[in-house]
Image 1 (cartoon, one colour):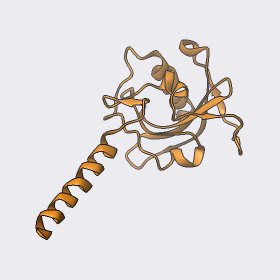
Image 2: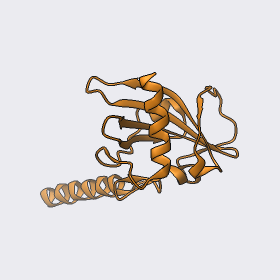
Image 3: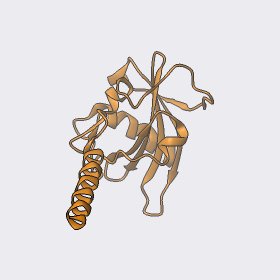
Image 4: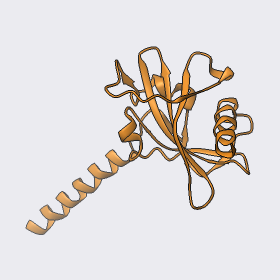
Length: 151
């Protein structure tokens, strides 16, 4: 009797863990992050940022409704670039941590959050680095960030 109760409890705990692990925010589905519409999801913050950081605006003709800024970028030991981006549309804003391989025109998102601090630790891995071909927003972001890195 006690043994079966313990087994049932363990099964319930595993089921609960499985349910929370599989629920993903709307911004991350099928191993992709939709940067263009990320600001429209529950990940985005609303209102005034407590400690707004000034970034460098990135020209994005493919998404004229939003303002994109690069707040920080650094080169990794493997030669890729990690860039922290902020998207703002109206009073909503969201942060994305991205990784780029400038030599091969590859890009992916490794974190999204509603604050600059949280984007460093939150995970929204949208798969491996992959080509920006056919993705105008990612191409614009990549070109700008890579140009800054080589300057």
